[in-house]
Length: 463
Image (cartoon, rainbow, N blue to C red; front, side, top):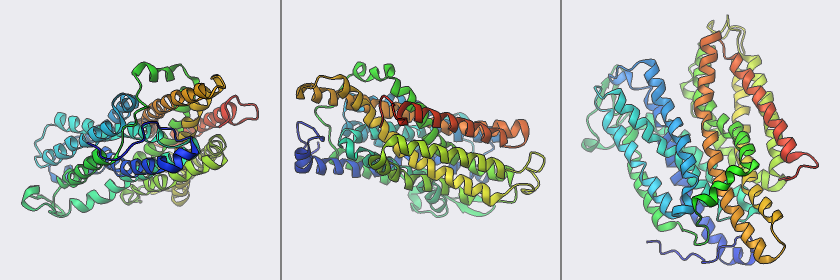
């Protein structure tokens, strides 16, 4: 069991309590949470790297089947986030983080075993792809857990660090897996090498390489995290968020930020290869997630200092302009296959660099908005008595944690819908122009929503 002392009455808004005991406990939980979340993202994105190598080692899956192996983790992870969002107040953050991290062993070991046999049925591979969605689900519970520990003035920065450094797991997987499969790092314990046209490959290491890290992170969560005694809540107490308009408005905005981040990370290589055929896009796969992940903590910090609505508004302005710039840089449909004739590859990549940077900052600012809105609404409707205000703050924190998880679930569906939109646009017109135009219109709706609900002078809940 956890031997770390945890204050029995958790009130991070009390400056004296925060300076005396709260800060140390909150920071310890944050720094244990970050590597666990990074591993979750790495496992979630494993198939985006593995599918590229399956044909080389003898698997005879169709292109459509390979696409589904890449898409299923996103669908599963987004759906699991809906349930994981409510798990922390029901079970406890320490207990659930330990269980959720340990669950990553299933897809990591299963994938390592399955890829050693080219006769493995596609149906079994699809099950393993769905299990990788466990990593995507962990984000909701992780963010809900950390949100309880920090005062509102520091919550944006803390959530930005947890999410931003956790998102580095995507780039970590896309960088480490190619290195791990090129050598027999586990010796006889890792299985025999597969022979390919380019030499020996240990594709099983794509899964096995994470096993010792998952075990270490599971132990760290069990011994280093805390279950806060006064944050337990039943499902009914959390389900009240479905009656709050902020929940649905912020889901739309978070779909615009995180949905863009994860969706563009999945679709950029396909976009570059299809529209600028002379460009080898494989080496670009990790750059987008890296930019967005590194800048997410900055978004939380900026929102803490200048207000979440103001930062989010200008982020969507930048994303709309970047989407229009990317649209302008695309070659025409007739020229799309002619080695970029009529298009501007460098301008296109620069526009996507802005999209990734803006979505990363927006991820942090929108989460800061969510964490503050529900507390502010409950405090405003409560009596002025100190006891009533304390109860309202606690109830608002529970609702905010549930809303953070639910919004993260809705946002994660962007990891499926954006690539599908791009693919449909390519199939129907031979160009991604229709998809990029649709994304620009969507960002315009986010600009209008942010300004009207939270950013204008007489907004009911400025944040």
